[in-house]
Image 1: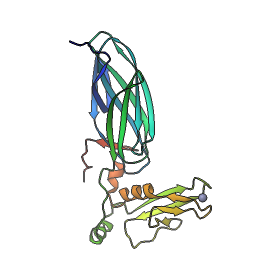
Image 2: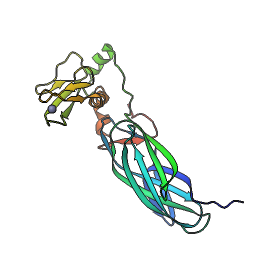
Image 3: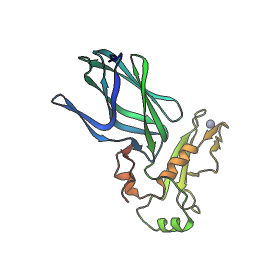
Image 4: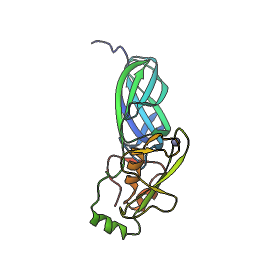
Length: 235
Ligand SMILES: [Zn+2]
């Protein structure tokens, strides 16, 4: 039998909480999808529990998180100690205020002593897929008091710092309240002060995710994000 040259990843668990009691680890609230209505979002807290198996020794473990645009969103490192050949040892990471700039698939690359070991991923998405509503559907929603009928977003020009206040409305015939601009058609908005082109696609998507849903869906959830195994929120 060939001896194992370096540790291997035996399991990789993403969850709400990891408890350590009596020499055993427990993973609570395992998930692979994080739900958020508005982006950029921040996920308050999650844990990663990694189990390694292999020869005795001390090893450096590094995790690199890549967001859906390919940018490195975070890096964390920890220590793996395997007391004896063939034993399994755990490394726990506690991630707090994790940045989620957009929806999509986030990759987690595991490095051991600087070498690539494994790749994992998790998904971030709105709990209800956005869709076009018919005029009839909108007319019904407008009569229901608990439906979100407008959503606002401030967009700051990154060159001149001018701030634009946009309001997106459920009723396509309604006008924004005083002090707000309607979302322009198309993704590019030209700053009236300096002429810079500002991309509104993320703002449009976030506001569209909120408008037309029951208010409780926003209020009953955690302040920033919620997650689960892929099931939609209760109607
Ligand atoms: Zn500007």
